[in-house]
Amino acid sequence: DAGITQSPRHKVTETGTPVTLRCHQTENHRYMYWYRQDPGHGLRLIHYSYGVKDTDKGEVSDGYSVSRSKTEDFLLTLESATSSQTSVYFCATESRDKAKNQPQHFGDGTRLSIL
Amino acid sequence: DQQVKQNSPSLSVQEGRISILNCDYTNSMFDYFLWYKKYPAEGPTFLISISSIKDKNEDGRFTVFLNKSAKHLSLHIVPSQPGDSAVYFCAASFQGGSEKLVFGKGMKLTVNP
Image (cartoon, rainbow over all chains, first blue to last red; front, top):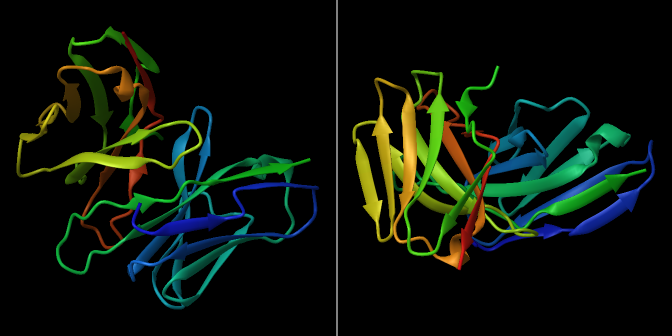
């Protein structure tokens, strides 16, 4: 949907290691978002971007950083992974160029397990 | 503090009957509401939305109703089909700058043949 590719789709790593998740979009959407989904919590916003090099924090940003050097790529980094960051991570994009109230479109997620 | 609430974790209905999914919100600043459907191992898919200037929006089998005074919205699926079995998320945002979405916890709908 909306040409969003997340990589990797699955990853298992150890506590304390750095992890980078990638979101790539082909729709030239200005806005990009990272969410995590956990049982009993729905989707919670980690960080978002409103343009190249323009990012801001979301609801659960502690322990995460992001970068957006190109319109099509939005990277999420866990500098030192902890077991509490085991989750399913979703990237989303939104155009908002032609009109307000445009829906966000999601990638298929990355399942991250931190042992 | 949960701003968007889906109080029922699951719903089971028979094929052909109506499914009604409910959502309550607490922030009166919200002015745009969406429903997403999610299958296992896939990302959420946008289903239908409604602006706060309306009280109803219809798209095929799906209708969303908004009651601003009660801070309540509902999704009606008529007739329900087995392929509608999924987790449904209610989400809301407001035109306060970033328009970030706030999601409910989700509700699992099962449509039995």
